Amino acid sequence: MIAALATAGIVFFGVGSVPGPPIPPPVVVSSPDPRPGLVTVHVSGAVAEPGLVGVTDGARVADAIAAAGGSTPGADLSAINLAAPVRDGDQIVVPASSGSGMATAAGVEADGRVRLNSASTTELETLPGVGPVLAERIVEHREEHGPFTEMEDLLDVPGIGEPKSAVMRESIALP
Image (tube, rainbow, N blue to C red):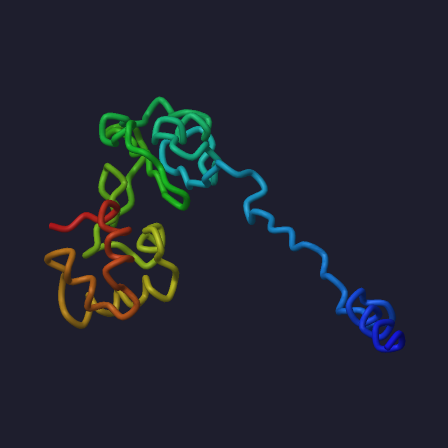
């Protein structure tokens, strides 16, 4: 009887039992952006220092232009919405006023929107979410099927669905 109670005590209190697997260390999750709260935008055109700039999340076009060193004397700031909010990955093109000596690209409107029916592949690549392959598909579609007449025509280009079309919409000029 005593032996049975002793054995039960060993089993119950774990004396002599096999240890369980080791407890793994806690997982530390870090943010991929070392500077949370910042977004990166591409500012080009009539600005002092064109290129990539970081602005706080919730910044406006005017803030991004200021981060790019401000506009040049030949900039036409009335052609863009300085109060528009910027999103990570946006491109902001500050147009030059006519007569300033700075020409706008053939496939780009004065307000920076890309002319879908005349833009080169390089100009199309400035659209959000468009890289070299997709830009080439847009040009090929335009050459094979004629000019785009409405935004929905973009959905016929392989690789462009509703979400991508929605992101591109504000950056595109159609006749």
